[in-house]
Every structure is written in C-alpha cells, then in structure tokens.
Image 1 (tube, rainbow, N blue to C red):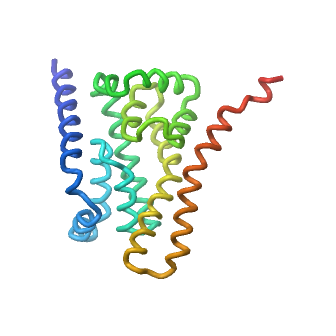
Image 2: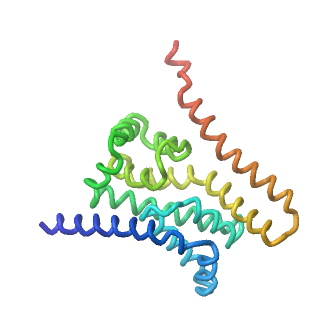
Image 3: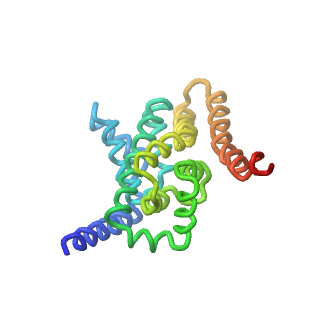
Length: 222
C-alpha cells in the first residue's frame, strides 16, 4: 500500500513537472539563466547544473540548456557542467523508471520499449552506447526507457557519460561561438568554422558507428 502511494506521488510529480516545464518554457531563457548564475556567485555552476538536472528529469529541451551552458561558462567549463548535469539528470530518470514509475514509462515509450529491451539483452552496454550516439529515441524519453531494461546502473551511467561527450562538446562550443559573435569578440570566423566542424563531426559520427554496427562479422561469415 505504501509503495503504491509513493509510486503514485512520484508519477504526479513527474507529470506536474513536465506540464510546468512546458507551460513556462518561454520564461526560461539564456539571459534569465545567466542572471541566476551570476546572483549565485561561486555557487553559480552548481545552480546551473541543478537546473540542468531538473530540466532533464522533467523533459525540458536539453539542447537549449547545453547551448546556454556554452554561452555562460565557455567551451571547457561549459562542457563539464553540461555533461555533468545531463548525466546526473539521466541517472535520476533511469532510477525513477526502474523503481518507481515503471507503469508510466511503459505507456510513454509504447512499442519501442521492446526494441530497447531486446537490444540491451543482446548487446548490453554497447547498445546503450549506440542509442546515445544515434538519436533513435528522444534524449529525455530514452533516460526513462533504459531504466526498464536489465542494464546495470553503473554500466548505464559510465556509457552515457562517455557517449554523450561528443554532442556536449559540439553544442557547448556552438553556444559559446554564438555568444562571442553577438558580443563582437575576436576570431569570430575561426570560432564559427570550429563550431560548424564540431557539429558536423557529432552528426557524422553516429552514421559511422551505425554502419560499423550493421557490418557483418568476418569471422561469422566464414
């Protein structure tokens, strides 16, 4: 009885958070985030990562937060804060799905859950790496859906962190480059070219991995 009550409470909190994130999405922009971070002083990075964590759990667009992190903190620290916030948020969503909100996640992911479960059963962490790099599923939905598979939490956490790194670097730098362009900083052409190159790599890398994954094993062919 108590377990069911906790699950119901978690379910309504998640739904309420998602609805609030959708209704008030226009009120949260890069300028607002920058003010909050500045007002927090030395705790600014922690505030930003906390916002990223909450946003990940409640389905707030991660791309916006990643771009904002690059604009506020620059390419190096921005990547660290973005990746850390996204990974912790993804971990919380995974645990919520595994232990408290499994019924809701089953409905949310519909028929694709069987595909995820089958992939994890067959390939383990390699499948998690694949779906992190190749966007077959929306990021926020994937975090919850993987919680219903048999993947070990530590494997999920490490694989997610590593495989989200290329995209985090690319979009963080893009946010930084856009901010520099708007403020008229030096080396705009070089930064713009580098940003485009990083985006191109992050988009091209999944195709390479997908081809390698689908390539027949020579040893099996023999």
